[in-house]
Image (cartoon, rainbow, N blue to C red):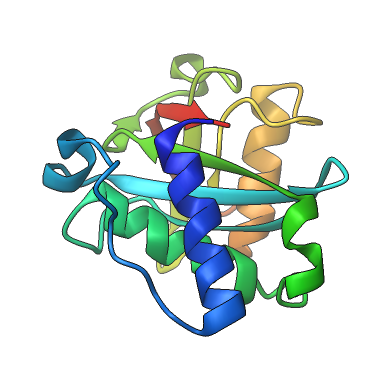
Length: 169
């Protein structure tokens, strides 16, 4: 198990069982304590999404702190799901995505749903979709889902940004 996945699991466990937010432990490599990046933490139970929260621009001082914050939020604050219970903890699979900085693309020709995640923006509305997701089989599907998440209606002008991820399971 990758150290960031272990960290996400430990953060959620400690928070749910004891109400405590951990700090980055000694086993975390310095690169994750010294660098910052956007991070998404996804939780799955029986192969189905159970929570997913993240940041595309870092809000914490380092990647390790970003993982802790987003892991706890994924387990307790994803509005699509009830909070994870102590009884579920052993059945939850975690993945951690470290995001590159988003870059604007001028055309869908610069997208690849397997390689790039996307952010669509229309005014104040923003929708994000990670790359290489099960059930998303084309750039068009990726764009449709991201627009729907943002509440962007067909025909609205959008800006598109792409980013890459390092995914750890």
